Length: 70
Image 1 (tube, rainbow, N blue to C red):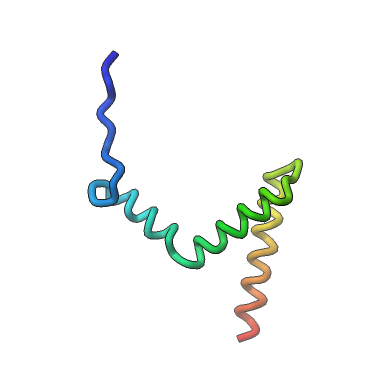
Image 2 (spheres, rainbow, N blue to C red):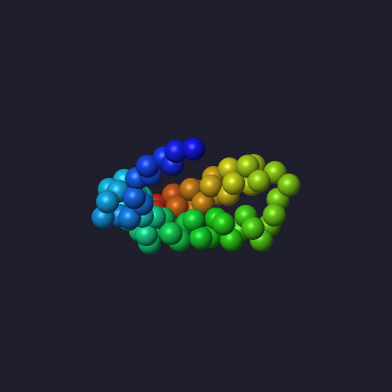
């Protein structure tokens, strides 16, 4: 069986991966994902998709409320 040639995964070789890593490292993205995953895993809802959808709606509402207070 032949091995497939895989593209190296390092950011210096794969610009798409480098861009994804840079985006994920942005403070607001990392913070949101961290809180999202913590809430999801602590809550362990039966309907994970519904929980995620509702969580995102509430998060957006908080963001809008905060931005209108300025």
